Amino acid sequence: MNKDMKKSMLCMMIAAGTVAGAAHANNPTTLGVTNAHVVKAGHIYYNVASGERIVTLLGDGQTAPADTGNSVPIWAIQGGNPCAAQGYTTEYFFGVDNPGTTSLSTNITLLDYGDIAADSVVDCIQINWVVSHPDAWANGTDSTSGVVGVEELAGQWMVWDADNGRELNQSTRLPLVDFLFFNLPGNTPDNQANGALTGWTADVDLVAFGTATDLSFEIGDTDGDCQTAAFCNELVGTMDNDFDGLPDSDLDGDGLFDWSWTVRFYQPGMGNDFDSDSDTGVAPGSSSDTIGINFGVPEGMAVDNGDGTWTWDIDENANPAGTGAEDRFVIYNPPNSTGAITYNGGYWFGGFACTGGLISTGGTGYTPPAMFQFVLYGPGSGGIEYCDYNGDGVGDFFDVSAFIMDFNAMSPDADVNNDGAWDFFDVSLFIQAFTAGCP
Image (cartoon, rainbow, N blue to C red; front, side, top):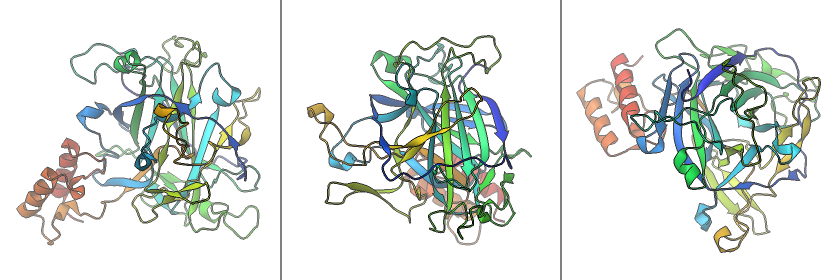
């Protein structure tokens, strides 16, 4: 198929050996952000187990996370402007691959990291990209049929166990899931004509609801039991390979599990033929052919420390909280002659601050935190038993009536899939849960 978002590979790596980590530098190197007008055009629901793809433009509403009826976010760095309260409207993203610029933005691998509760089951991942490559865009009969994709423009995302962005340590970084999507949707004609870039998000569902296929995984296994997940790195949460008395997965000793995710993009014209059609795409001509990712922040608020520095105060009680997310990320060099991807260093953007002045009035704009949009979903009901919506112990007409009232009022309780929209997907998931009844 040559439409929407295509799966080329999903590789489950359960016991793949040790990989050198990356040290938490006190003074990470400063990089510049990319300032451009970004229009978030749409959202893609993609099921790697069943192959289902649904593309919705933002005006059409959002799609669901994992198609299980009860998947909710369990860790989130959500896209958005962290300095909106201070009057800033600047659009930022980080150009992970900008042909024709520096070695730090071509074929690099970006690694971001954080903390999460051990033994967390993940059944869906949200990824994103910001792209300037024009989409092939075919004329169609509805708003989503025009999305074709950019020939051989690809992105590879991986999730890792036991990693906090370190460089030197005897502990292990173990890969959990590795998947690559090619012919990514590109810049829409309208955005291109207006000088804007297009932002896309995608919920990558690892569970095929109603089938025997399950590609979910558990982060931070401590007991040798993958819980309800299909696979995990067994007992990775108990390893202490450097004999320092701390689990390798909790080097900061905060009681949470250290994990990371990486992204690397592949430009067209580089010899890759992921879809085996003997076409490697059009070679990029300049840095205008950029592709990158959105910034984001967990639930919380910007805090002025009063000494010229700012911090992002994460609301640890919010569900989901992007616990352990830091104002720093790591870059790995492109593969060398042996194919190895080597550590380059720790980076940030100069320290998060809601100061600098509006760009529209000659200022430099705010300094975004070095956090990138990424969401993990896991099984849960968000505190609501949809088989007994009103909580009276009986599943009957009154539950349906209560749900309809909340749905019409756009109550958070009726946002069954927790995607911020009240649409067909919420109704469908409610009906599934109500019909199945409570366990």
